[in-house]
Image (cartoon, rainbow, N blue to C red; front, side, top):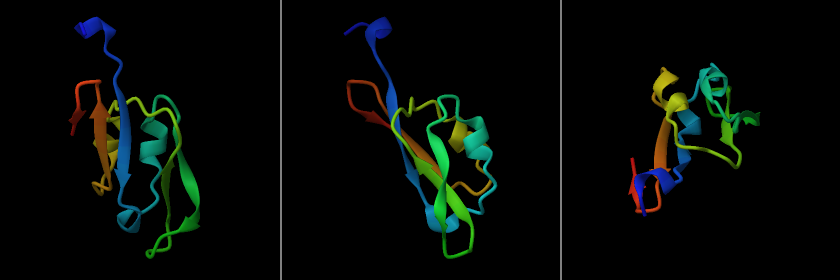
Length: 81
């Protein structure tokens, strides 16, 4: 498969118990696939939840001040972290 034909997708590992609910990840997400949960974590904060359509761009991971998010990218040849 050539480079231009690759489609990169991603998924997130969200450590909800560490989230402080700042919502920076939601503001940074270009495809708008993150939303705040309707429940709270052990700290009393709502945390992000992932819907379908993550592109693996890592924008959410880069802005998270508490390192709550880890993006895993899939490019058709395996998983990249």
